[in-house]
Length: 418
Image 1 (cartoon, rainbow, N blue to C red):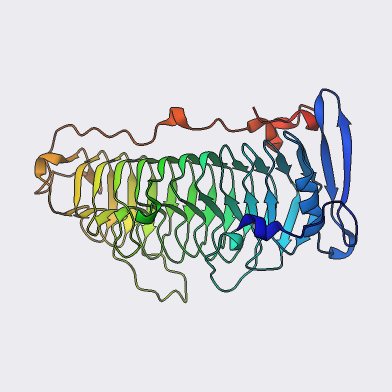
Image 2: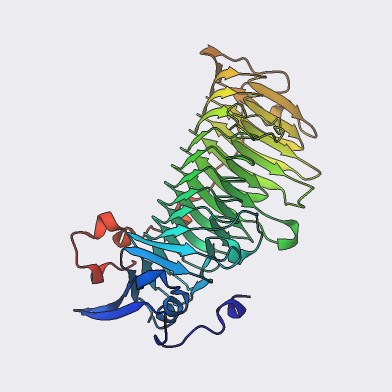
């Protein structure tokens, strides 16, 4: 699919329109390539692709500040290459050909703004804004405004870092991780007003492998018209910690689930900790007449599959229309501990599980409106369940030297991934 998308791009920087491209020497480093916006708003997709294709391993393409019109997919295929674009905006003109396809091992996309296009939701990888498929790829400080599909789409990725990005107004998920991706860091991003899940982690049965070891931390997630805040729908070894999730209009702020309708896999070993959740399913924007899903703010449920080994601890849940926490159907091996619930429309703790026993459910040290909650029927007040979530030691180090604020004290050509 990728080869078909990039076939026919120019091999040299000739013809009109074209980007203004220049290389400059750096002492002790591979020369950067600098690109300037074309005058008059001409389409620069072909010349940008040629510049990308000509990068050597470890080389950086620097997009000068300004606006670049891009009419088709751009493919970043080189190993260890960097595309840096602080102050640069790439404006898409084709809804189904607007992705930056990141496949080069250990490549980095940093600092660029991507303006999407599309009024109808699309499902193709090429209609996303950034598509990641490979090893060691990082997407840092990228601003995404609009788009017909997902903002950042990760499939079959390993050792991936998505850090400091802003995703707003996409018609599908803000960030979507699937295809057996593993060792993925999702940190310090702001995802707002998306058309579906703000962060989705999905494992389909057809994949034959789980998406696993995913760490979602320190993100601001707010105001999606449909879908969940963070959804783990099939997967293993996932941590959702220290996020602020507010104004999820129609579903759970955090969902851990197996869904028959989408033929997803089961889920195991999930940590949901220290998140601040507010206004779940009670902050609908005018004109959003879709029915609410009726989830709890933190919801665990299944179809015919199972969810096992989940720790929900230290979360603050305020102003939820339905339950604060719910476990429904084939859910077992769960501890709900030290959470603070306030202004909950339903039950603080709703247990509707089956095929499990109270000794495998622990509810302790939770409060509702400042008052201690006793363990409800079906839940023990003490016990031990082994749950670890993601292994942070397997996550990739972030290439902070490539980020604008951390490279000001060094020559630009020395900003390299380590």
